[in-house]
Every structure is written in C-alpha cells, then in structure tokens.
Image (cartoon, rainbow over all chains, first blue to last red; front, side, top):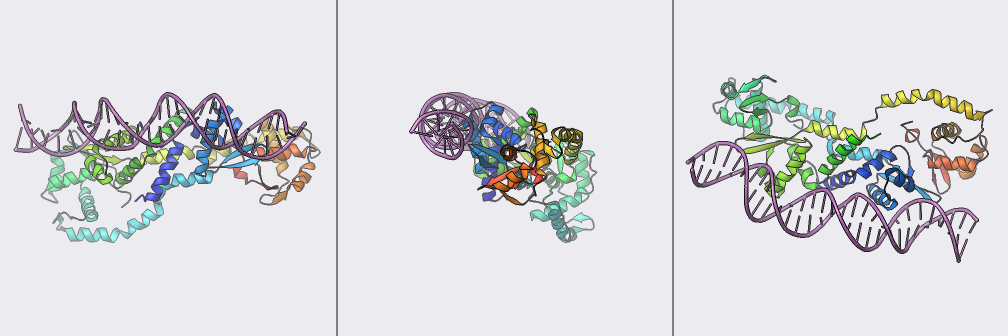
Length: 196
Length: 196
DNA sequence: AATCACTTTAGACAAACATCAAATTAAGGA
DNA sequence: TCCTTAATTTGATGTTTGTCTAAAGTGATT
C-alpha cells in the first residue's frame, strides 16, 4: 500500500500545512508574490516568524524566492501543491480501478461456480479474496436500504449456508452491513471495497 | 479567499494527518475494517496508543466504529477524506473565476481609456487595482516565452512611459515578469492574478 | 566607510503532543 | 456474581515546534 518513502514525505507535507500561519501564508502567496516585510505586517507577526515559516515551505519546495534589490519576493509553486495533494488519494485512478475490476470479473465468476452448488454455498472460502466474492453473492439476496432484524438476516442467509452466524459476522466485519441495536442494514455499495 | 472557519478545519485536518502512526492507520483502514487489538499488533504499538489515534480520527469523522460482541471494528470514511482534500485547492471554481473576470471588464477598459492617451501612459495610477490594469496593458507589447535583456525591456517600455525603471520594477514586484541574471521574461499568464 | 532596509540565525520559552504503564470502564460468558 | 477480554482514561515523560527578542548577515546607496 503506502510505501515507506512516500509515508515520510506525506507526514512532512501535512506537518507543514498543519499550522494556521503557514496556511494563511499559502493563501496570500496564492494571490501573488510577496516580500517578507509585507507578509509580516499582513499577518501581524514578526519578520523572523515569517522567515521561519517560509523556510519550512521552501524545504518542501512549495515556495520559490526571487531577489529584487534588497527585498526578496516569495512565490507559491501551485503545481507542487497539487502533486502533494494527489499523493494520498490519487494513486488509484478511476480508469485504472475500472481496468482492474474488469480483470477480476472472470476470477469472481469462477469462484462462484466453484463454491456454489444448486444455489447453495458448499463451504466458505478460506482465501480472503474468494471469501469476499462469496459474501457479495449472498448479499444480493438483501435489499439495499431496508432494515432487517437479526432473525430475518439469519433466515435469508440460511437459504445459502447453515452456519448463518459466521456469515452474519463476516458481513459486519468486512463492512458490508452495519448493525445498530440488533437491526441490520446493507451498507451502500460504494463503501464496500473500492480497491478490489 | 480562505475564510476563517475553513482555515481552522483545515489546520485540524492536516494536524491529524501529520503523524506517521495515524497515516499507517489510515492505510490499514483503507483496506478493511480492523479491531483495536489487531491494529496494535500490526503497527507494533500499545492499545492505548491506538485508542488515542483512533479518537483523533473519529473527531474529524474520518473513521466510524462498529461494535460486534466485545470487539469494536473501525472503518475509514473514504468520502470524508476526499472532502478534506478538496478543501484546500478546489475552492476557486473556473466558472466563478470567469464570472468575476467579466464583471471587471468594464472597469479595466475604463481605466485604460482614462490613463492612456495616443497610445502612451499619462501617469501610473496610484490605486493598486488600476495600476495592474495598466501594467498588463503595457505587457501586451512583450512576447510570452521570449527572453529580454534589460536594455530591450527599457526600450519597449519607453514606447509607453518615460520612467521605464519604475515600470520594470513593478513588473517584477507583481509577478508579471521574472528576472534571472539580468535577463527578463514574462511569466505565464495563469500565474499572474487568477483572482482579479 | 557608513548607513539603511530587509532577511536570517541564535537562543529562550511555552504550548502541544505522541507514547507508555497503570487504572478504569464495558460487555459477554462461566 | 465473578472472570475474561477489549477499549478507554489518566498521569507522566520527553520531544517537537511556534513565537518572540536580540544579534548578525546581505546588498545597495550616499
């Protein structure tokens, strides 16, 4: 998943953005380049404080500086900002995800053929991936948005497998269903496993 | 710009993500729901530590918890994560920006009519907004992407205004041009003032 | 040289916080 | 009712860090 090198960078990035003054600084620099004195006046802090924060932003290459006579103008690198923002989430592009999901279609159907007979589950797969395929297959017997008392969940599952208790537990553990005060409901599909 | 309410939330968000353990936690919870004990074992920290971090993630509603018998399963709210990530950048929609730029069109043209006569600048406006309009008008005489020695910048500006020195300085100060070792170049237009 | 405007570094202080061990709470099951 | 397992709270500790003042550094102008 998240490799170690990226993790360190990501921590640093968020550390940098986790400060009100620095966030304001970025807000101002997004408008235009500023010099230190003006930034200090605008934000109501001392010049060394500005220098301190600019230094941090520079270390992440979020701002560049440019000297004009005595005064130094700082400019935001918007592109760089976007790079960081993509790092946490954007690693799984929709197109890519779609591609992989198609790749797995055969695997899913094969699993279901293998583990079901006459509409009933022969045995719960031990392999995690296959187990999820099976759970999702059983889940088709439930209506999304409707609430089920525990007894009714058992009833429905029983049509597929005797050990309804295990299946019910797996539904919860894997986020397919939620339970509140003994009442069960299927979670919306997009919350299941977008990474599968 | 960045309003105060959003700013606080954003600081909190980044504070939460600015920790290696929590980032790993999010990485794990992105895969599937986990219970506290397993998370502690997986990350090699104590249970209270996990509890501490989960508490922080919960405060930002980044994770939900779900009790199954004695054990509590924590699940990541991916949607919420996306919301936060959009907050920093996407706040200025292109459509909105376009709208505002149209609003200011008349103002711009009026300023140029007022301050130019026979293609020459009468005087540099003191008011910041108008000054920028004027600078941008003069800037049209430069090619984007081409490099100009200082002498040539002076030459071009001289066609509009005698005090080329001030104009040249204003170009730099306001981010319209950059200067490196005496060579000038016009910055790409999207870096000027998207907010104007 | 001397001065001036601006920036950066150094040092100090206080606040925030990650972590752990120990104590406490919560919920089942014997 | 007691025992077990898991989660949370509490308190302590050491680290990090934002901010300031004072001092030093940096370029340009007189």
